[in-house]
Length: 450
Image (cartoon, rainbow, N blue to C red; front, side, top):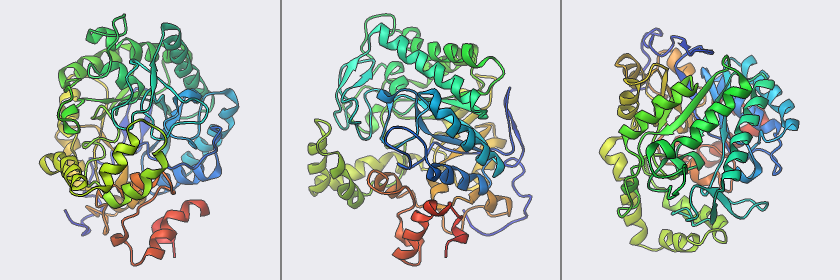
């Protein structure tokens, strides 16, 4: 891959509009649901959140997919993310969507519920809700098995959040159904141990997400964009060699068919039954940054102190890092989920997006031209280069200083503002800090930060 410029029209596949049933996006590039802790603890949004999302719209992205947006206070994944759990949050999203559109991109809000898996627990609720009463395997945060009444309550919470998204005149909704959060906890046979109508067979395990989709459609009608992000495979053994493999690709293909029948307009393909997972985010395991940041979580879950000792203790820590990185060494990082997306795309008649480290125009163009996906979603490479789409438009294959997949951004955000923390990409630490802090100054693009 090269940052050398080619003909400015070298990537026509990337810059063709993508037509969904109810939404047209100007190109095939979507920003993934990446964000820092930029909002207030009560779930109200801030100007920093607006500046963060607008930055990527100005960089040429076709659509911004919001950070995970809780539909209920008990479902937050990490504090200080804006919610869409009450009607008083609608005016903020009206302004946010308006500002992103003025900057040139569509705005799709990702509606989410954490379940048993949380990055940092909330002071408001100390137990998550899940398909199981077993704690999450990484941090060990406690949870309780949802009753039927609680399931109905959360289904309605998703539906009411969808109504608010439409009232806010946003461009669409993405349901967060992947990477180990609540919907994955129902879909995955490695997690879901229920014996009622929400557990057991694939049809039963898919009941909850299908109820969410149908309830949303009742609130928003048939003419508002609705897409679903799903983990195509659990790949449990990538992290825990003793774990069940869980959801298979064949099962996910069937679930995707059911989702389309229920009213989904597009699918977004990821992988992994927990977050973080060696396939998501694929790449390096930055031990030094993990050790520095993980102390925030020490008092939270039953496994966090054990994890902290493991991260600090050689050679155990280096062995864990090697285990973590083996999927990326085997499959590569860029396009790691592409064959999964290709298999699903062959079986459905709605556009399919693919996540997975994309940052080379040539790779993205081939993925689209070969029928692997209709578009791609980009996270870490846009943190490193928010104007990456504009660079593609100018004829670059890659940014002059591409993302290194070091994953320091996703570790440091626990305690610090989200940004690129790979100092080798900057002339100095001071320059790195200026780029990270620029979101508080109206989010200029890197070329505008002096």
